[in-house]
Image 1 (spheres, rainbow, N blue to C red):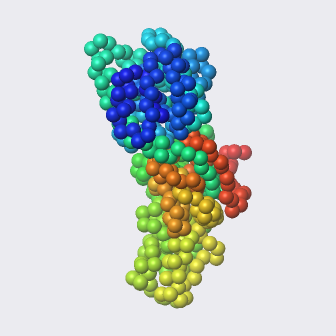
Image 2 (cartoon, rainbow, N blue to C red; image 1 turned 180 degrees about the horizontal axis):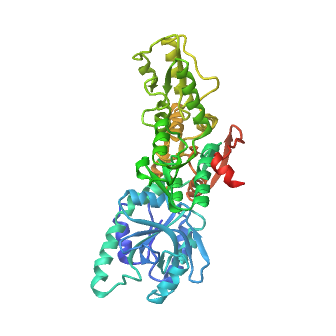
Image 3 (cartoon, one colour; image 1 turned 90 degrees about the horizontal axis):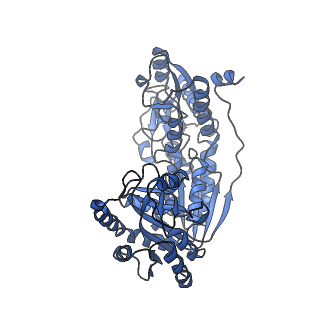
Length: 501
């Protein structure tokens, strides 16, 4: 069911391309009329209810022409009339349709809010105001609910006679784009099971790297410079940047004598040399498991071996390892690369691995190396880190039962991308998403069981937000498929340990 307050709003909704079978209801303007429509909405027993229309903007940055998707609906006294948990999913779809979208509370008032009334409502944290949502919401009677308003005025840009028609027409035109989005939302509505892979999200190396930057900011104050992303996650980087971390690509962007943190992915010796030349105070956040691979590269090349590094070109961890012995370490990305390798002595060949590879794909390369160089040897212990292996094993368990799997992580996160690869190799569709707003609801249509994991650099809160949004599409049960808990932790770098005391 789609509800709209006024005749023109209902007209726009009807011409937006709503899915077949949609019931369209006009509620009338204001709380009194909207309250009367509640019974009609409840008795229709719709699978989902959406209220669409025009509204006023309250929040900072909310401008005429923007779209507000309510995550909760409040009455004028501040009480919560309803929560719209699938709001982030709807907002993502609307943004992909080219609209500027805000998600937050919408407050319903008994009469038009103007002047100081707008300021007072904005102070409550609401980002938009209307006169119907709080009265209509109870009619949903527990089924998925969506509230979408197109902003036509704000306190800074109130409606006048001249722009009343212009903004109103523009708002109605925006409403006429909602139909396909609401169709995808309705198709995704229904009961489902969510399966969480365990372990998921932050690993010990990532937690340590983030803590390094946080402690450096506490001890030295802002700015603290960080070479490259401290870990490959845009949310983590944005959060640390908001607290005073300055992320740079290369050290020539750092003022001489400043404090700089090297990322969890490690750096080549040449970068250390450059830091020394610029008199930088370095705090090394390299993951200890990455440093293990660096140490192996130094040891094996020092004894005369040709080292074959299995990994992906351009990844920071790979660049750092290659830099330990330029010319003595060769990168191998796939089994096909093995046929073209040339080494000085086939009897003195060692392989190492990037720590975030997919285990099964890495083994295919190792098998090819053994076929070409029978004397090849590997490291004394596995290079692919425990966190990468655990997350891959856990997502396989989830994939055994899931119709679709969502992996939370940034596009430049190698371990997150490998989780997608592993799932697809199990024959299950999988998608890498930065956060809940990147989930396309067409992926969820017909998916009774949705699996969720997160790369080792993704904050666990992002998984919580995704799980909550899915629960807004219908009754949801949440289960866990675990391969065991992780208890490993790493000490802070010596520079910070001394300071902690």
